[in-house]
Amino acid sequence: SQQGEEDPQALSIQEGENATMNCSYKTSINNLQWYRQNSGRGLVHLILIRSNEREKHSGRLRVTLDTSKKSSSLLITASRAADTASYFCATGLTGANSKLTFGKGITLSVRP
Amino acid sequence: DVKVTQSSRYLVKRTGEKVFLECVQDMDHENMFWYRQDPGLGLRLIYFSYDVKMKEKGDIPEGYSVSREKKERFSLILESASTNQTSMYLCASSAQGRDTQYFGPGTRLTVL
Picture 1 (tube, each protein chain N blue to C red):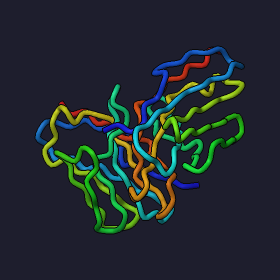
Picture 2: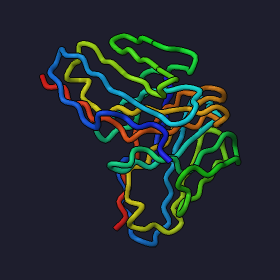
Picture 3: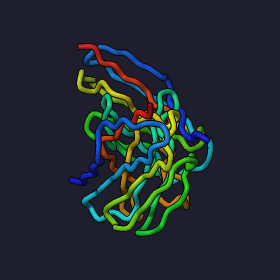
Picture 4: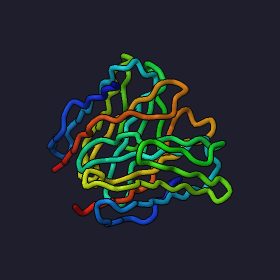
């Protein structure tokens, strides 16, 4: 069964605006990750946050994790046309041997 | 940089054919994974391997088998391809004890 569910399914913004994407999950996790996928390509790892962390930053990316609500959000600040891609959250479960469960993804379009 | 390569970007096969998809990683990773990606369903884990000659079923193993004879190579086998196996196939690897996965570019398989 799918662990992570992203919201919204699609997001369209103007270049320079911030993009916020959300992910909810159902069971206890060890870590939560966000990946990006450009059209027709493989996934690229963006950022990982562990269950004992609340917020992490990497460049223009900010991810938060609320384990009480079983949710995470990914914020991309000052978006660029090159940020246009699909974004996936993935959850790693305790004792799952490095397996990840991916959500269905969010399609982000950044208009120039 | 970690590099994960897949044998073909695009592949067209006929129903009933035996199909081999190969994945090679160059970072000495212990864990390797095969996913399929379908619109609206996200990524689903087919099989994974955490050591040479070791394999475990993922969420949708039916109709597939795998082989891992060498650490760097993980093969996905479709014993008798069917049209419902038309999909994008993604290979990934990760180091033991590490949660980040590194993906190949994907193979878009069409079964006619």
